[in-house]
Length: 187
Image 1 (cartoon, rainbow, N blue to C red):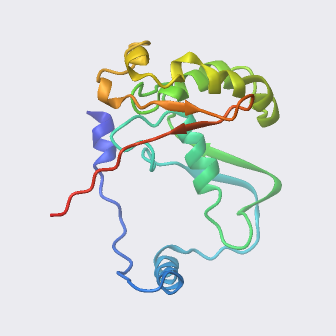
Image 2: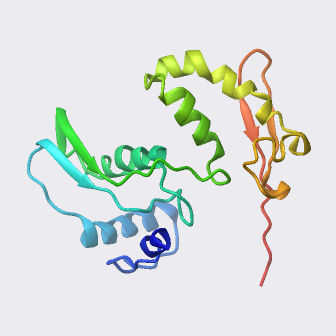
């Protein structure tokens, strides 16, 4: 109940416009309208910037806002919502506020569980993560690509139709590809 309450709140903004036509012209008209509605002028940069993060982001609709998604939203989206230069100066401090539940949805974000508990518990250095963990994650039998073999292996998925095969290719170099069928129907 509490999570659904947060996810059903209406946003305090409206449609900024409806545009059609050549891509660059539509993009220019759309961003002009968004800036008019949402842009706030700021002079200079802050030594300390505080941000309150909402309970929902593009990746957790009808799901859990887990710790990885909180960081993605705060550092990937909110921090980068500026024009010309960041709101906090280089060497400054960013403080993000969010309840950050230690909770993961095993169907919507199954790989986040292992990544959070195994990788981030040991290091947050991108070069070390790549060197130490990338090959293991890319070649883990859990992601072999046989849905019947992997279905319900870790009791994470309750429906075999939710499992998609992962194909590994480029011998000696981890690289993965997942295919999802897209079904479109005309009304």
